[in-house]
Picture 1: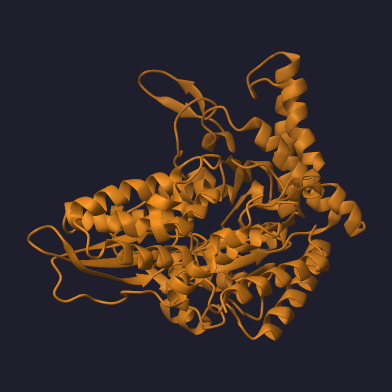
Picture 2: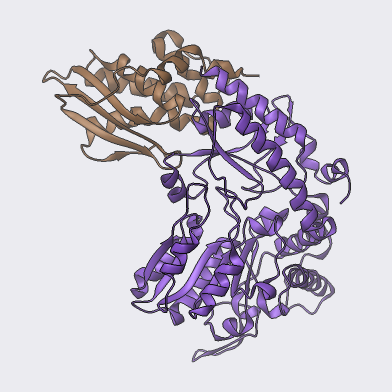
Length: 405
Length: 151
């Protein structure tokens, strides 16, 4: 991987000061910053190629279509999909899960069936399944976790049954950092005939993913958590599943012919892409994937792991910090509370030192309830963070702690 | 630039660590729940209002950040002994203080001890923390049973 200094220079936003202090951006689990190549890809589209895709016969539309579809091909290669028909562009991981819950769920889930999710899911992997269960009479069950934030796999074995239609699990927890044993989950789910959806919104920038080797049925992610633009994401699904699923939304691009009597749907992947898509976002997504590939996911993960271990050691040495999420397999997320300092006060105090962290429930209220805290502070790392920034973080935490003594 | 210590003044830290009038109030004529689901701030306020409209006693319980706890603690101190009408006038002045433009001078004298919470207007994401308890009292007085929000 190229030197850290050069990587930081790829991200223009990192060069700024906040309240007179150098920006220390440690809110990467909320969204990552964007490298110049992504910014340029979005700008170049609007500056040079702006046109609608898939329908124009003119030069601009052909260029726009080519760049947009190249992004799809970049994703095929990145996650080792079988082919480009298996990559559906959506607004983000949230929309992808809603798409599966509505489209696949409406034809595959009935009263008495069970949907299995985990205790550490983001709200986006809870609410769509609650709705599906309300609509169909299916039952939502939850795989519990232990005090470290690791899934209780014995309990998973017990919950899994012939009634389980789908297991929806986060690949890497945004609130805890836990990386779940997804290969084992998929193998066991398939053994009882259940499908598996993995929420990869956090994971894809930190963990190398091969959807075919995993044999996962659905894999979803958002571009903006892996150095790409907001408002665009991906649903990967096995082609046979997508073929059998009804369309999610009706409109342009997803049809082949329309009469007032009936409509014939377009081929994959367009069957699930109604309306003019986020073309600039898709092109930026492609640039982000190529950027991550140029650094190497394994190299990114190794760098972040060093930072996480360095930060964890400092937190443990403090005496007044409680770590929330200490699973053996975790990555890039340090969730914690500071004795005597509410996370929101901590967030405000750190902000004035130029340190951006997240304070809150991380859209995972059940996780907060499990650990008995209203909120946590969360520092989350990306490829451009440094050990020196971790030192700044802990110096600022020490100052905040002292204020409330 | 605004000094952080102007927000987390010692008086605010003190009230947050040792809130006054904290706990259930009996007897109590009015009470209400206040909840800020985005923050997780949650409090319950209790009032004992006499027939002549005087707030004889007040208390609160719950959990939240230093700003929300200090604001509730100082609010109870400011309202006890005053009438409901006087509270409503104070509510308006408090709301104006924490939402006024940063470059507008504050009337510290009119706000008394509550003036220390004026610093919160420098922190837009924290204004709701300071004002939750005030909305909660207002809902206790005006609409029994509802849950107050600041969103």
